Image (cartoon, rainbow, N blue to C red; front, side, top):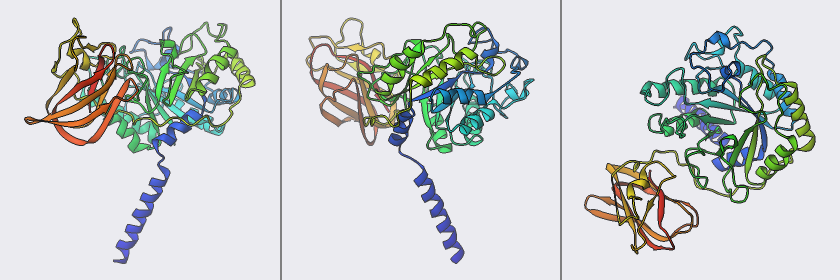
Length: 458
């Protein structure tokens, strides 16, 4: 009896300690924005190619740094008054720069025989800098790409994430790329987002997960990410006047993400422009700015890049915490059950039929005919499904003024919401779980054109 009591108390103590260490998502988001400015480090197999997208079967022997110096990277980041780094552990061509047991296509099998991730995390922590990691879902070497996805690929990805999140200490954030973007075309169904997201949180509850998916998903909500992330070089521009979400904006100081032979003498981004038009205004808009600096084939950063970072450090100082971020809805992490399901709807305008409202494309819309006073749209769910969230994304904010949401079970319709529309483009309605076969949205009051870009049921 006494032994059982001791075991119970030990279990309770362990549970309480774990609970005390786990922080709320809001606190983690605030802490991330408060970091203000960091260093993106694109260093991987593309460093040794003429392209950022190299031959996916480029030999392991091509990865051959002769003077790898992660301490130089960390000191350069410190000189710029950056507060963290983020390294490309695996880019789109699938080469791993850590001591992985999942594949021979890694830096330990190269002539350098080096665990770059280990050297990076140790060097940045020695300088008092936080550590983040970048990881690509798209992996052209291992054929994790459209048309080739298999269930075993999810297991492979989780095995790699397990190594990164258990062997290298606390990771502040994981930046994920090459997943459900228009150019990568790997859906959150094929590699299930919620499975990967929950697995990361089970390994490191305080690790933020951000997917570089702003090319597809609206800027007004956290679709499949803890932090809204913008790749400026791809035309994704954050609105410093309208943003209300914890955000990240990334840009390279050089002309490409990975090092190329002309870079030691190339003209870099203007340091004053980086400070005055990027770091400062973004920090004032709940946004952390990460600047990429690409190491060369020796494994060091070029002198011109190091000098530019020193100049940034002379112009910009970390001023501590930013303003409190606004409260926002929780990230959407589950797949849309209504995606591609049959729809029914009131009269549409021209060819803008209801199927555009659940086609997984936020650039298309169902548009109601102007003569319909109370437009409605129904989405099937291909059977009875457990649901607890409905989202409505308007093409333009403000046309919907009031509406009703109902779900059908059996022969009966049940009301989930009826009232005034929230004043935002992406409207989220959460409720206790119910079993449903269909969901119907009826617009009871509107102004101007009714156009729904996407209806989500989760």
